[in-house]
Image 1 (tube, one colour):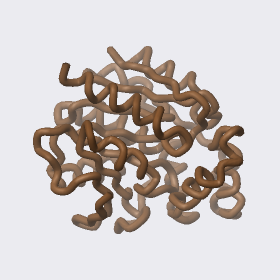
Image 2 (image 1 turned 60 degrees about the horizontal axis):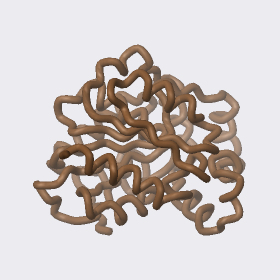
Image 3 (image 1 turned 180 degrees about the horizontal axis):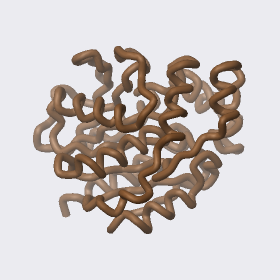
Length: 257
């Protein structure tokens, strides 16, 4: 895995420079996280694509203060992909990152090859209590990540819990604004405009963005493919990386058949 920073945006890459003859999976993390969340994907999917995991503005090692609107994040991701000159980009986002990927598919589909929407929804309402906890008791929020975002069977897995917490580094203000961006996001009346291949991923034990969110997107995005990851919660790329990667590998390989 290779670390780079360009125009204030930090990212990890599975290979560098990018292979111009391969598509590029651009991994976009969720609220309060950073690109290292996707380590298993950046390393594990280099056989089928270029892989990049970025730190959103204000997160990880990227510059800036973050945003309160998904559209602003999407604009920054588009600028980043232009700066890196990503061949055949495939945005792959989880939760907030999935909303960002969805916004890109809606507004910049002509510049993308496909998209992957993981553990997310076309609308992402957030309980006010969650934002309040982030702002007033950040340690409690971090403890809740394990309780509510990891499947019960995986909560005893110390490696999973360590990685979830180690990649949730944005701090209270930026994280609270991430959740505000999620809460304001609503693309339910726009997903019908997407005309690219889309993989929708959900997880059986995800209580934050339940499987029904993915069912709705798969039914309303023309030709979307839906795969549900077993034995995982909201953090499925960390909880079940082999199954998660296998679904993306199969989807990516199908694009050129």
